Image 1 (cartoon, rainbow, N blue to C red):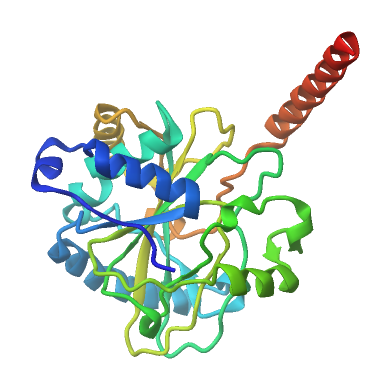
Image 2 (cartoon, rainbow, N blue to C red):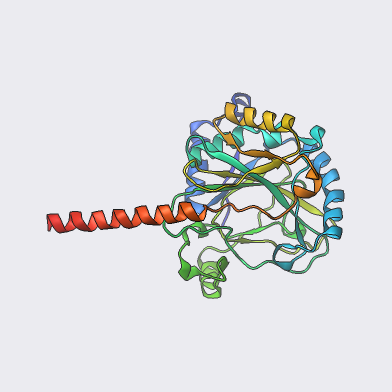
Length: 314
């Protein structure tokens, strides 16, 4: 299967918004496959400069941390917002990315997550196929992850394996240990809609539904593969997530830029030890327990009302 790939026209780049034809492809791609690729939105030279810093920083993190994602040679690593010269507008204030997000998630979508992961070289282990979040009681997209690789990537550099259309599989029957896909469903899906490891040029953005099955893959190359992740939630998704920034200048810049594009940025200033705090795996993109209970209660009330309505018309 080939993933939907969308490139911006000169007019779309200049206006900062997608035309109707590409908007249709973006919305349909997310609805059908749970993922798509936005190509050529970021200057490759910006990727190169960020990568130079993040490779060195990633090796430092690996030497200091005991936490590895699923026990593989894959570390949590956020982009260097404390290096103002590397906070490029086409990465963190990309109008075409924001435009795609708000057309999928709706008005006043929240930008509440900045992180990333780094696949270390000459690794051999893969993660289990898993979903970052489930939500059995709804099928609509409520959270998007924008993954931005800093180098040209493909299977040879451990690009993430993605399972198209698995954002529809949200009930408990598909999973064990909370988030890992059961082997029988993996086998079935592999026959009908097999996974992909897309080949991507640096400057591209992979936009995926948070519930999509995926897994980190081994990076057999000699290159460190850094990938940034930006997260966006629907206005009505009741989480308590925020992204960390080092100072008020960065906070104000990102809030104001996102607001101009109809996005609500949710930063929190971490003024002490930001270079360490930024990489901690201390976020939760899911809804709070209180929000989940309230939603379940409303659903139960609605089911009762539906039954009463059926009884009255019978």
